[in-house]
Length: 331
Image 1: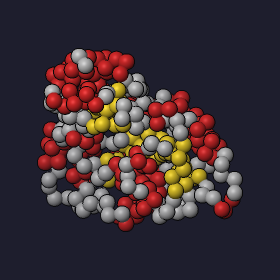
Image 2: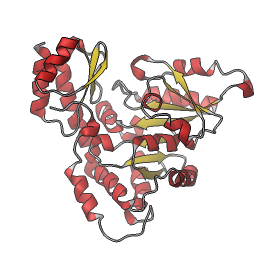
Image 3: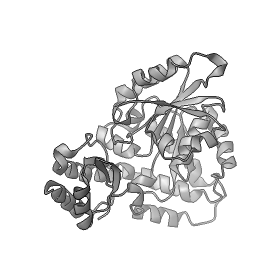
Image 4: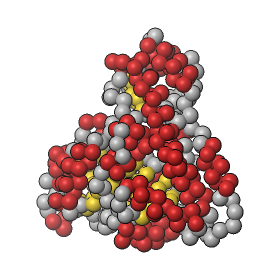
């Protein structure tokens, strides 16, 4: 009974069907009919012009988006526990040719205008210091907490005031949007670029980089090629993304994952370290508790000395979630 990661979940059957249908001759790279459809589909979704490009990984999506905003001598303000800081092996510095991550604090791995301001006010020595050029926030955060539209708007206002770009790491954008019960445009807010995650939500190997400044699309196309992410049969990535958008499969999958997380959360009760607002749970567990759950067949990651992380997915078996809830309640 697997609660390690939504990355471990199977690919949704509708995506296999879409990739099979795409297995026909077409032009290579991103000139095929499916890839050319992406801009229009995401423009309709967000209600404003955008350029949409496929890449294979969330790391590439994040770094390529940030590369449109930040110079090699610049910096990105992000949370000290952000994925780009903790889990991408220095990829931002690699893709951005030496740019630095400027680390801010915040409860639940969320930034606020105040915590961002604390970082910015320390940059006072001109050419001797790395200047901030962008902000990156994560929807939902590393602890599964969601930015409300007014929170994103407040950070966007600060970014515009300071002349900074604003990027959203949306690896679990679907889960956040489903929880908030708002439109994709409201969930993303007035960001400049969005890494729209699909792999964690039923995809095989396709993420979307959404640029709301369409004039930067050519820049990212060149950077994508240079980074080794321009796949010659890109239609298979586009097919996955379009299949996820059809009939809002991405939201259906996210709601399913969120629902089983909520069931487990109700059983975990006061063991929860954070409210459950997406598909991740952080649960207080001592060594004996962890051993007991593993002996019963539950797989999960130890998070720190006092907690474990449980992640649900679109494919989590409801009976497994129910069994886990009962096991936690019985500890």
